[in-house]
Image 1 (cartoon, rainbow, N blue to C red):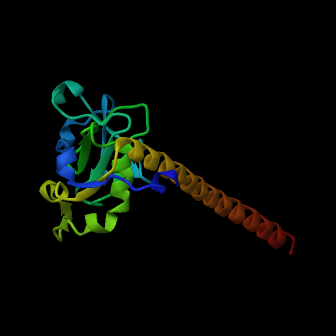
Image 2 (cartoon, rainbow, N blue to C red; image 1 turned 90 degrees about the vertical axis):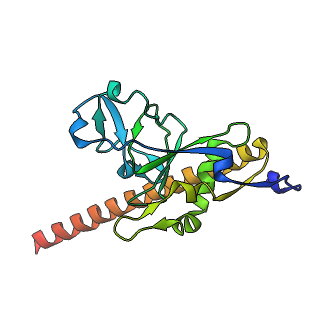
Image 3 (cartoon, one colour; image 1 turned 45 degrees about the horizontal axis):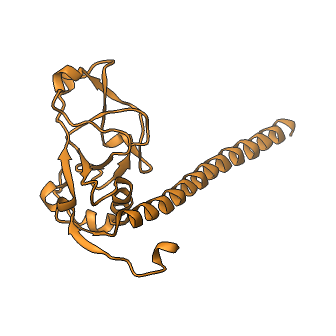
Amino acid sequence: MSFFSEGIDLKYFKLGDVCEVCTGVDFKSCSYRDSGFPIIKVRNIQDGQIVTDSLNYCDPESYRDAEIVKYGDVVMARAGSSGKVGINLLDQEFFFDGNLFKFIPNTEMLIGRYLYHFLLSRQEEIQSLVKGSTIPVIRKSALEKLRIPIPSLEVQESIAQTLDKFREIEREISLRDKQYEYYRNYLISGMSKKSSSKS
């Protein structure tokens, strides 16, 4: 790949030095509504992306100061499935609850999609930060000390674009596998049922 053809000017920083780590709001269940502004939780991170299954909603006027997850923002589970990472590729904005972190990169140093792939690549190290037996939690202060390699923005963009393509291929393969399983079961089961009905 071209970005490895020559030496890369690479520096290491603590994560907290190149991006802000924000903790979500502890929404009370009594504030949930049938409609309003959507709230994402850990369950809304699936296959590395934000999904809109089983959303909760609230009155946005009650949470005017709350951070919002916008398109391209990266989040991570801080409790429960700690370390689980997702990116918002939907044309929709969300509040995020207290079991999630949101990352706000210093855009002069760090590209969000590069950060996303970095966090996915460091899952073993991130899991070592998880503490607690009853409810496993990642402390913000520990996460901010995670060391991240920072090349130029141009190199970050090249890396992110390449890895985005591989992630898309991975999702297509996963979808094909599910389609294969469905049709395999449908066709073989259907054939077996017809055979048994004739005998």
